[in-house]
Image (cartoon, rainbow, N blue to C red; front, side, top):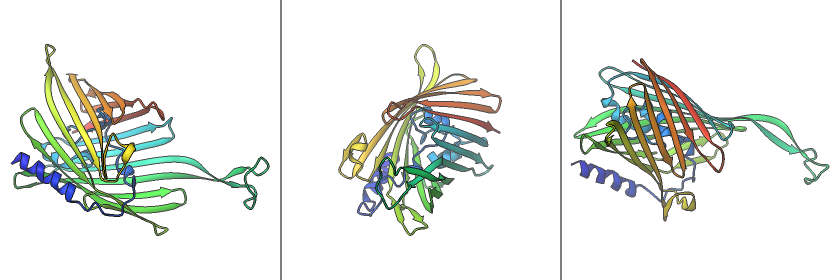
Length: 317
């Protein structure tokens, strides 16, 4: 039955309407990830029940959560030009709910024009900044979990507000996720993002469509030999239907794939270590646990743009 459920998910993906007129990369604001520990593990989290950001990753895991959680994250990307902040929470007694709110911002962007707009650009007619604007994308994910027959399903409705230069717009869509426990040590999970296509409506009349994609992930729990240190290995892939071609690791017609690897090592109750591979760059990080508080740090080595740093503080009750 478990393998039958995975087959259903894969069939649904390939039966989705691939002829839709969609905008390539329109859904990148929903692809920034959430949670510092997940970022440190190669941007993986579909099988991570310890993540506070389950609304983003896989709310089907909510029924495996016993505590209430809260986390605030701040990230500096590309020499600090891009700021990425999130607030994540899991709460509830009989039923658990999850909320993740993210903000992607670039501040003080100069808008320029020529001193003489009727003339061409040359040394005596240079551009000048007549205005500075801020770009910001705010996205809210609300995660709920339901059991349907033998399946644990997660649903994530999401809303977005976009403010780019002098234009603004709203977006709405939903993700559907699930998981399968094949053994005590092995878990598989899937998340069909933008399942019904996500719509982004701009005030100037522009209409963007985010085409569905699927994330698949496996987690294997093990002890490091001789040292008996609990650890977990993560392997995941993103499958897009946007004809991304050379911008992805593998391109097969309109389908393209990217890969992720993650390793979690828990040598002591006070701290955890993480390693990962996010598409083409290495990640690492650590968590410090003090009573009910947790401080997390993640680092991504990017040789093309610049390194990224993410920090967060969390509370579990």
